Amino acid sequence: MNLRAEPPTIPFIDLAAQRRRLGSAIDEAVLKVVNSCQFILGPEVREFEAQLATFAGTKHAVSCASGTDALVLPLRAMGIGPGDAVICPSFTFCATAEVVALVGATPVYVDVDPVTFNMNPDHIAGAVETARELGLKPKAVIPVDLFGQAAEHGPIAAAAKAYDLFVIDDAAQGFGATYNNRRIGAFGHVTATSFFPAKPLGCYGDGGAALTDDDNLADLMRSVRVHGAGSDRYDNVRIGLTSRLDTIQAAVLIEKLKIFPDEIDARERIARRYNEALRDVVTVPVVPAGMSSVWAQYTIRLKPGRRDAFAAALKAEGIPTAIYYPIPLHRQQAYKQYPVGKGGVAVSEVLAQEVISLPMHAYLDEPTQDRIIDAVRRAVKAG
Ligand SMILES: *Cc1c(COP(=O)(O)O)cnc(C)c1O
Image 1: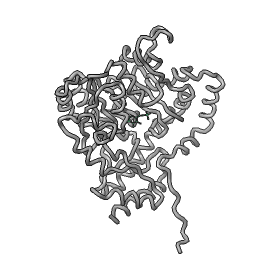
Image 2: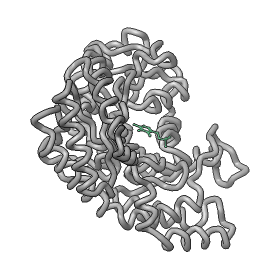
Image 3: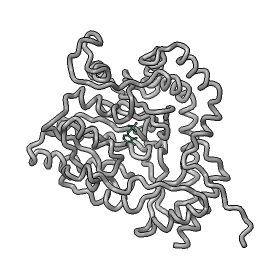
Image 4: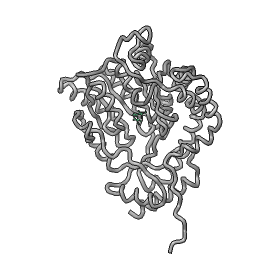
C-alpha cells in the first residue's frame, strides 16, 4: 500500500497568485467604476488607452471587446473584404484566420520557421503568387508573435512593402515583447492584442486593443467599434460592430499594466531557468539576438511519437501540460477550405505533432519549477 500522498496538481497559469499580489488596488478600482455608473467608454477607458499607447510606443490605442475584434477593426477599417487575400500562418490560434473569413476575405496560409515557430517571411512571395492565381487581390499579411515571441518583423515589413500589403501584427500573445530591442506595437500598420485572462496582459473577462501610428486608421477603427458612427452615434457612415472595452476592465488593466514590466522580467527569469535545465533533454525555445519574448507559453519540442506518453507521465505527477496547437489551420474543419501558399506548410505539420507547453506564469516559484523540471527529465529518459 502506498501511504504517500499524491503530489498536488499545480496550476498551468496561476491567476490567483497575481490576484493576491494586486489585492485591494483592483477592488477599489472596480468599485470606483461601479459607483460612477460610467460602464461604457468611461474615463478609465481613455486613461488606459493613453497608458497602453505610451507603453507600446505608438500614437493610438483603440481598445475593444476582444483580441479577435482587435483584428476585425483594422480589417474593416482597411476595407478588406470579398475578393481580397490575407496571408497568415497555419500554425496559430484559429482567430488569426477567423477574422479574415469573417470580413469575407480569403486567408492564404504560409508556413512557420522550425526554430522560432513564427511566420517564415520567405513564404510571403509564394502566397502572393497563389492568391493572384486564384484571382484574389493580396491585401494584407497577419504575422503572429507566437507564444509571446516577436515575429520576424523586419523581413515581413520588407516583403509587405514589395507587394503593397498592409501588416496587421497579431500580438495577442506577444504584447510587451521586443524586436530589434524595440517593443512591438508599431512594426505593422496595426498591432492587435488580447486581454483574455490567460494572456500575458489579461483582464477579468474579455478585452482587446488595436494600436497604430496612423491617425486615419485610428479614427476609422474608433468608428467601426461603435456601429460605424460618423459625426455622432446616430449618424452611421459605415457598417461596424459593438466592440468596446468595458470601463471595469479598463480599470483592472490600469492596475495590471503597472506590474506588467515586472511580470515580464519574472517570466524571462523562469524561461531562462527552464532553458538551462532542459536544453540537454528536449528542444527548448530559441529567441534570436535582439528579440525578446513575454513567454505567453513555454513550448518545447519532443522527438516524434513521444508526446502522449510524456504528457501522461507529467499528469501522473500532478503537472499539467497543453498542446498549442494540435491541428494547424489548414487541417481544421472550418478552415481547411482556404488555400495554402506556394511554399507549403510542412513545418506546421510537424510542429503540430511534436510541441507541448509547460506551466508558465510570472508567479511560478523555484521549488515548483524544479518539480516540473525533474518530472520532464524523468519522462524524457523513461521514453
Ligand atoms: C488569444 C488569441 C487571439 C484572440 O484573442 P481573444 O481575446 O480571445 O479574442 C487571437 N490571436 C491569437 C494568436 C491568440 O492567441
